[in-house]
Image 1 (cartoon, rainbow, N blue to C red):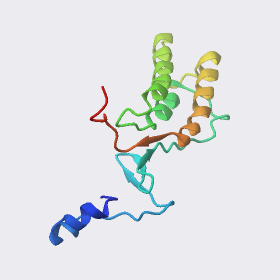
Image 2: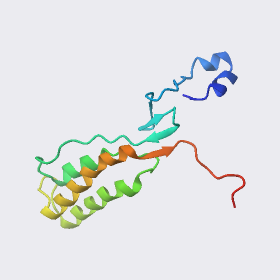
Image 3: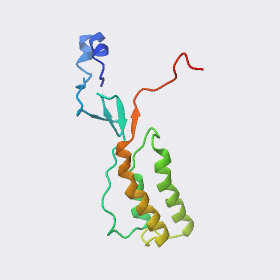
Length: 136
């Protein structure tokens, strides 16, 4: 997949058929490596789908499942995902079973963390980044 018409034009005709071109529109997007790519802006967007967990009894199993749903293969939002993993670590230290309700303290921390995840939708990461040849 490419958003470069220059690149696609330079390919042999047989290769062009195997690649997919992306429209340069403000609404177009593609899913790549579990991320959403906006070709017009050439940025990755973290797309987090959360659900209402206010009425759910939080257990180690529920927290592990919700935390694992945050797929970040490139580590772009590790500072965020590590918070959920630290809470899981706290649960292991408490020695709770998979189906035992978690403490009120951890429940509160996890609910606050989980409620903040949709804010990642505003986070944009340039697809290509690197060092300028002229920088020191």
